[in-house]
Image (cartoon, rainbow, N blue to C red; front, side, top):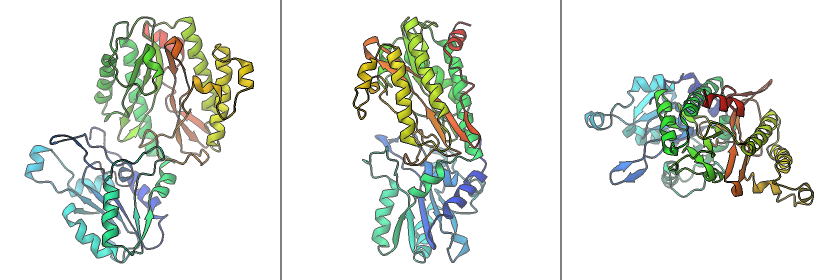
Amino acid sequence: MKYIPVDEQLFTINRKNFVSRLKSNSIAIFHSNDEYPRNGDQTFIFKQNPDFFYLSGIDQEQSVLVLYPDCPNPLYREVLFLRQTNEHIAVWEGHKYTKDEARKASGIQQIFWLHEYESILHTIINYADNIYINTNENDRYAHTVPYRDLRMLKDLKERYPLHNYERSAPILRDLRVVKSDIEIALTQKACDITRDAFIRTLKFVKPGVTEYEIEAEITHEFLRQRATGHAYSPIIASGKNAIVLHYIDNNQVCNDGDVILFDWAAEYANYNADMSRSIPVSGRFTKRQRDVYDAVLRVFRAASKMIVAGTVWNEYHTEVGKIMESELIGLGLLKKHEVEKQDPKMPLYKKYFMHGTSHHLGLDVHDYASRYKDFEVGNILTCEPGIYIPEEGLGIRLENDILITKDGNRDLMAHIPIEAAEIEELMNS
């Protein structure tokens, strides 16, 4: 890992909160993510299962966490199994956790090697009534690959068919969405690194640079500051590319007179930032570009004020839609009389603003959370309105990350320039 070690108290408290919600006499099993094949004998860069990291702090493949708070043998109430290193692994792959290092990282005292997992599990699992298994229940996820947790579930059910099987995901959905002080600090660090990369980019962009050169500048700054890298595939969309919401080719020349839509951010210690900005290639917005930019900024300002405890998800997006309608009328993109007659189920503003305004943020960029639960203290949400005008080859999106506190909200990206005049000043300084 590139990041500075995280305080193990985060993971100790997370485990305490999780086991407090288990049914009596239950065992919960969590697996690290798979190492996915890339081609031949290569695998993709390993990315830890966020639930496993949330409970253990272990950022390594081939690991298993077993939590059994009512285990009759106190030795096995909280156990971590790790891949045992050897001389071959050390030469070809590098350092792996020692038992002492794993204790320090996780706060878990009972550490065993992975080859001991089956035998130890068998000695305790038959004393449990319930087996909690973790699966990916993020409602944005479309299941196509039988990942490790599902394969292990199938194996467990064949060996222990009469146990009662329970889901860990609903518990984690409630827990992960409320961020602790340590998690907020890690997210803020990701936002701070993102800010520095943005300032660097403002001073780099000029007519004739390519989107991939800009991506290289961003990546350099991320890695220089210990970020894992990009929180998601970076979008550097100049001109008409900006009307493609998930444009990631990043292979075009940035031309004088165009606007570049940025959507990129850093990941630090597995916690993610998420930022969008739109900047003029020349360093100056045209009047039309500035009018659209300022309209999006007004929607952003109004929407971000609504991100407070007690806000209802659907009502929030409906209200933002009304504000966007007004701005689109002002820009001449919608007509007031047509809006008054529109089908409420198919609002006209969706032609120019077709995505949601916010999503939860954390260990996942689109973090695991309920869309049917009111916003609450400790939530971090994005605020990202945009206007996309295909006929003008213009797309503007602005996005910051908002933390809800008991006293309102705090913009974790308030230190990142967002006013058009400030961006122009920095680009021309």
